[in-house]
Length: 249
Image (cartoon, rainbow, N blue to C red; front, side, top):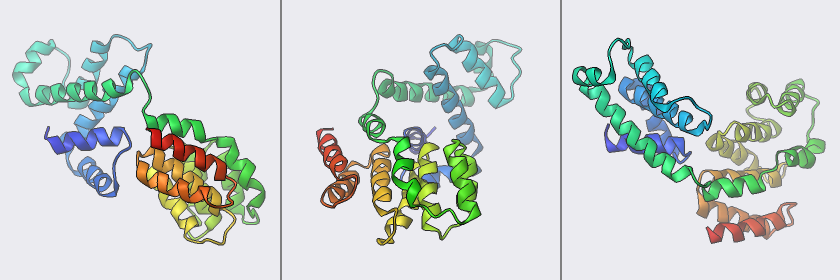
C-alpha cells in the first residue's frame, strides 16, 4: 500500500478530504480493486474496534479477511501467509493504519467533534426556519415531512427534485449534515448564501460554519463566524462564542 493511498484512506475516515482528494478517492474506489478491498478491510476493522461489546477481535478479522479475498478457511492463518504474501502485507499495513486512526480517537473526541456537538442543535433548524418556508409546492412539503421523520435520504430525494429552489437547497444542506455529508452540505448552503435577499441566509451561514468546523477547516470557520458576529443575525452571540472557542483550539 503506497503512502498516498494510506493518506487518502485515513483522511476519508476522518472527513478531511478536500474536493480534489475526494475525487481521487472516488476514482480509486471505482477503478482500483486492491484499494477498494483494503479500504473495506480498514473500515470494518475500525467499526469492530468501536464496538465495545464486540466478539473476539481475531475471529472478526479472520472473517473479514476471508470474505473479502474469497479464500475458504480450510487452513490456519500461518499457512495462508506463505501462499499469499501480498494480501498479508496489505493486511499488516492496514492494521498499522487502524492503530494510527484509533490512537487519535480512542480516549477523546477531536476539537472539531466537540465544538460541532456543542453548537449544532437539530431542533433549532425547525424553530428558526419552519415558519419561513413556503410549502405551497408539494415536493417541498413532502420533503419537510420526511426530514422531520428523520428519513434524511428520502428527504434528499425530494429536495433534489428542485435544484434551483433556495428552500430545497437549504433543507438539503440540513439533511446532508444529518447524514454526515458535510462537504455536500457546504455546497448546498453556498447556493443559498449566494442570494443575499432570502429568508434562509442567516441560517445557511451558521450551518455552513458548523460544517467547516466538522471538516476541520478552522480558519475558514473563524472567518465566517466572525463575519456573522458583526451582523444582526439571530446567531450573532453564538458566533462570537464559537470564534472564541475555535481560537483556543
